[in-house]
Image (cartoon, rainbow, N blue to C red; front, side):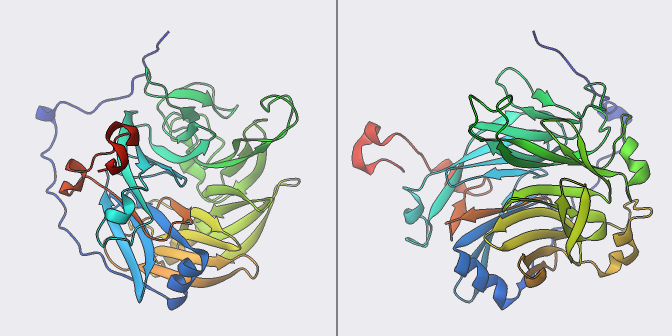
Length: 386
């Protein structure tokens, strides 16, 4: 049976004020330390970055003498889920699915330079669910559905399929009751919940939220200390008193997260719920990915109009930077930095593409998408692919 959930709608166009003029285009400038380029080359990786503020997906790649950064337009891009063969991107009211077509990558200009080519294949219309982080769990895409305070997956007959919500959330409602935002995938070795026996399986493991609240927008009253980390399988709250936590990640046998309101990368002691600060960074920390002993951390500025009462980072908002910081986890030191100097001021997600040094992502703003075709090799023989 299907159920219809509605949310308040805006007034008819005749009752609304005229739409504001389109913003003036701003040139995109950035600068990086030499160590940032060297590290991408050393690790053999490239990076994906979303900025909902600028409506862009960025693809950051090292080249001789610096960086080459692709800029692709999407409507409010947020969470990313990625591996070598596929990419999912959450946007304002859709989730886009892109697939890697490695056979055509060497043909893209400059010929022979690219080692991957992600092409849009399909999208799923969700409506504005305030999609935040996403992750592949086996073949399923799990999504943090912030507007409905739940984790969900997708089904062909529905906008979304609710799969889990915090025990303190009493109803499925489009009210952003706790600002659920981050998702960490871990291993589940519990025979009662794992699929068939004692082997471990990937599963949604931890989530972050900005409040333990069950009213519309209730989390807004205590941004400074209302944040929580939750264990998904049990529904238990692991840590309280966090300042705007985001981006929980399970890496190297430990749980990491970003305490955005303090600008910190932290470790969480799961047994006692204690927080251990790894490093302090010069921005609102959000978006976290790992490559070996290095963490790539997204940094954002805080808008002058943002209400941040009591949030420590707001006291120095004029000094904050936007970009990507690289932290050496062995020392806790920032060892490299990419700063976005214009156009981009807020980052949401950061993902590493391991083993891909120079990928292409085909967008919709140029003619390439109109003239690139992928068909089964068996259909046209050895020349298939374009």
